[in-house]
Image 1 (spheres, rainbow, N blue to C red):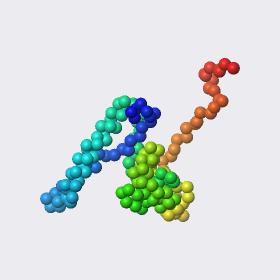
Image 2: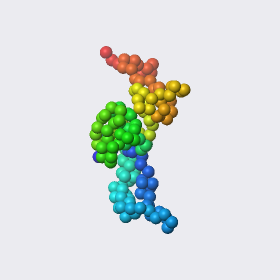
Image 3: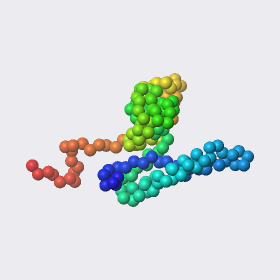
Image 4: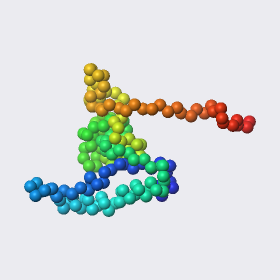
Length: 167
């Protein structure tokens, strides 16, 4: 259904192997809440996220995108501000910049659907972090990659090799 319905399908690039790692610990330092972690691991593996991604990739080759997982649940889908304090609890997201409120999972899903993950997006104005005077850059962000400028198609212009339209 995903392959037939959508031109582009985005998946959050989760490291399932690390998510389902054992909590047993060692003899010297035994793990805590091992039975609960084992139940969580079984539930994650039973969902078959990796298999869903793999099969969708087979049915829609070239139309699948993986969105890096970092910051997808901490980024505000309304203004793009990233702050760990915006995630009040497991279910509640309240942006510390623009006061946008929604369910935390819904906010993360909107970010994944928009392809907003992994790379910090610039904020419109200097806010809580401010701007350092030495460099003139925000002190709460990492350096941004340079973006390639891709010319957009302009209607009305035709290339030299294109056949003329009949009048």
